[in-house]
Length: 118
Image (cartoon, rainbow, N blue to C red):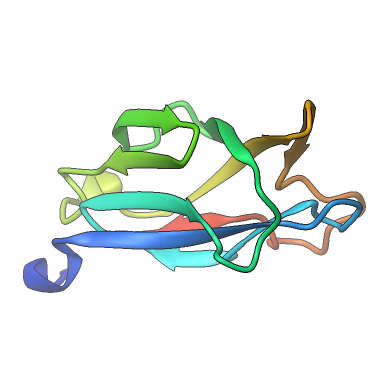
């Protein structure tokens, strides 16, 4: 069972734009879930705006997903419950100079997508 105190609170996830990279948007590939997650631009990144956060599974236990130009936030109030356990892959889309970039890779190694682990 989870340590309830350890999973409460907020986790900031830094996002880095790497135009022409593989992937073009880099994020910690594995994050342990918290009750609130916030994606923010890495201070070393080129400027961009957040456009979209999409979980690979429709039943992901995250709610109140709020996409703003300067951050994305999501809540997981049931993170300590069994229904929230698992690996939750997702894709982030950002825009810079009118061009969209994502966390998708061409020919990615298995299991290298950004994941929230609960």
